[in-house]
Length: 117
Image (cartoon, rainbow, N blue to C red; front, side, top):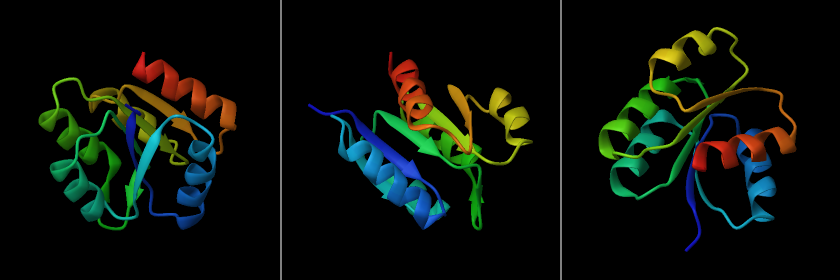
């Protein structure tokens, strides 16, 4: 059974990049373009990993991670952002791993493997 990943980012180009990267893997991804969409998907779906951006027009990624942690005992999360101050929030919000944009594909895949291990 493939690992199910929810990818949340308000940038369509980033979502397209994630789709391209993960299409060549054994992972199954679902995409969300807004905080509201991502939180609804987290409530109704069973995901193994949440990859989220930090800033959304309607919320913040660390809040998505908190919701995921409350819903799933062994929730795994990866905060991927271009917002330097997000690192401070990441350490106190239960984030498993933090990755700065821009990133190399290899860095993303290593981070995903590390979080899921």
